[in-house]
Image (cartoon, rainbow, N blue to C red):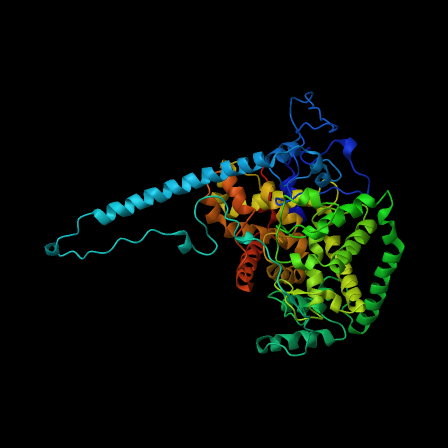
Length: 540
């Protein structure tokens, strides 16, 4: 993977991600990252007290490439420490914003209506055509009915803007509260044999990681997933007799960090880091609803976001758990500090380790986690922290200053698509769509904002089973993911339509079947290119 990425980035502009040296943050400070669902404000709006930037015309009038990208898309950073708070100072008219969006949608609607009229005219002309004579011996066959949007295959959509199928139709309503159902020993018959294989493997005095990876690659049963993830992530040792000792020591160590560092969150040096975490937790996923937090209530009141997990993150105990996990990690990793996007990576671990104790489907059920004992919640919190830390150790260059890991992966994805799907690559080039504009979020959040949580957990089964799966295999999954929607993108004939599609892919109803197909395609790509990285090198 290293050779893939380095080769792809050799011809990248040296100043692409470079910021003004005066704006380089101190270690441990935050640098918020904005995904497509979190657009930064435009900094060219004149506002009293707003620092004005001067263009550097001494270098052949060349602007920084990252600044050019920031003006073209919402998947970017902004220079402020907390741009969400600065939005309150901007005199932006919602009427203007809505009217601009309406113009874009109207243009697409007109194209769609024109196409529908042509289709109706053709159908009318066909119906008015004289019927063939009975004496000509030819059998008449009815003309096929026009294809309606409802007849389009599930992962396709009619020409026009991305439909944002994942967003759903009406307003979000939290599920009704249900009681916690504790885990029992009863398991589905279809998984019983596989579960027995896992349990036998766990009991071995010295577990063979190769055997465990083979067993996990095609998916892990829910009953044994927590233990498998802990071993594969490196949190638990392969020696069975040392696991309980390690668990007790690491959990105690984590809460030692809480006692030592958590009180520093209000100190001047760290208060901005904690404040950004405090803001990000309630909006863990895209389209999350407004949380009643005074610090951002006025700013976010016009930015409603929804997610199937909104009810979970509205619970104060859950928010506090995530705040502690992210703050302690940021304090212990000053090279990157806290960056927006890291917060999403806690969620799968938290939900999986929670499933060790309760049967409730967190994705669709609303349950009060305070019904769990404090000791149980502490165990889930500590285990989530350590496993997230192990994951980030392998991809930390995704979150250090300028995020070089993401830059290299985006370049590698671009070259891979160029080789495996030339029509798609050429279409994006012709419409001026940069890979960074849509795949930045795929790399930054490991596709968590593109697929449902259940699919993320299934995906991570395979990532854990792969050696360096989060760093290396993720590239091939992203390539297979983009290729899967290639036909849809080719039906979009302008920049806005393509981006609206790629930022709102219709994956809401995906299940294990779709993920298995995606992973199989990704494995084929890995088999073709991982051992032949020169195929992806840019030609000089």
